[in-house]
Amino acid sequence: MDKNLNKLCVHTITTKPWEIEESSEAFSAAGVGGITVWRQALEGRNAVHTGERLRKDGLEVVALCRGGFFPSSSEKQRQLNIEDNLLALEEAAAIGAPLVVLVCGAEPTQPLAQSRDQIRAGIETLLPRAEDLNVKLAIEPLHPMYADTRSAINTMAQANDMAEAIDSALVGVAVDVYHLWWDPDLEKELYRCGKNNNLLAFHICDWKFPVEDILNDRGLMGEGCINVPEIRSWVEKAGFDGFNEVEIFSDRYWSMDQKDFLDKIIHAYQHHS
Amino acid sequence: MDKNLNKLCVHTITTKPWEIEESSEAFSAAGVGGITVWRQALEGRNAVHTGERLRKDGLEVVALCRGGFFPSSSEKQRQLNIEDNLLALEEAAAIGAPLVVLVCGAEPTQPLAQSRDQIRAGIETLLPRAEDLNVKLAIEPLHPMYADTRSAINTMAQANDMAEAIDSALVGVAVDVYHLWWDPDLEKELYRCGKNNNLLAFHICDWKFPVEDILNDRGLMGEGCINVPEIRSWVEKAGFDGFNEVEIFSDRYWSMDQKDFLDKIIHAYQHHS
Image (cartoon, rainbow over all chains, first blue to last red):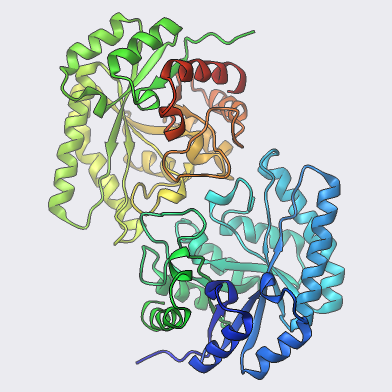
């Protein structure tokens, strides 16, 4: 029997060729329950009106992607990064998203530990405004192949450590199977995350092999070597009952008809996740 | 002051456009102390004579690359893999290499844990012959971006676990900065490795950013974000006093004059490692 689509969320970046209004209409018509909005999809729009439009189409606004990129060797740049994150919080509040996903950043000219200190300081600086706006922040551990410039947080344990050190009800973790499927401690660390009420989001896709592009060659669930159903079962056992968010960057899929791609997403969600 | 080159070893794959005899002559002329031989460099040659030739040029034969690739969903294929590894042991003995480096393999259609079981079984099957020939086996943990098809052992802790479980004086770990620089437990796990006499080899290069090719875009030490001197200091503190092996796969460097490239390697070794 097909799974119902109430808990399926699709990221606007997944159907990048569509304007957000086209995505909203198509997701809604297909019965998809939620949408996660990438900031570039809001360009030139009134965020409040866009949020209303999404809800009017029957979609739940699951999260805003993305904040983060805190580290820099320049203090001035770190301050600019904070300002951009404050803007992301405002945008999340405006569209009615309860969560901003953080790709935390890394500065290749400094040690990873120093980047992590700057990430922690950055998140802590955001907390008062996040509290005012009632918007949560989800630390997304990124695959170690992105440790050079995209994130100094590369395992589930590191994300848990950071969330627990910050120790705020507003800060947790976004789990993405693409980044973490190889992590030998994933199951154990997911339970730790859930136990501490830090499991805030769950992103799915697949790891195709061979990898043709380090950024934009993600696969649909079932196309690669990730056991998505098993990881999903761990996430649910950890107490998570939120959306399954399909986040796929793929030159291959972006070049095809997006309606056909959405059909494939729904099929993959129902049969391989 | 320039470091002397006694402890510098270069892999034949690093200067792939050269025949092994050309590499041997050039390394020797430059004062390089050691050579690690990739099996394809032996093609069409008598391995015993090649080993003699390398030693006559004044080089120490540090290791043979590479055995491994144990896992498969087919039992017949796993047996073929064992036979190929037995051949690698013979080749190592023939050229006088005390060590075979293992890229352990992974079968994307089965769980990583199952691939690890097959890796352990494979290595254990090789032990009697390794003992006869007095050739050691070094488990090389590979970066998690290779967990799909190249290795189910992706952290220093996993390599230590495997070596300790097999518990043979012939089995240890090969440490490569490219694969492990991001590993949050690297320093701690290096000391554990050394304490158990399992630290058998040390490979150096750098992680360029952005990565242009997932396989063949490694950088020279100093070109990327890896703190090679720091990791080298940990490796030495762990008790390792063997060679620093330069292992670089790079379409960019393979396309240049290899003598100029060797000069660059030596400069990078002396100033950035």
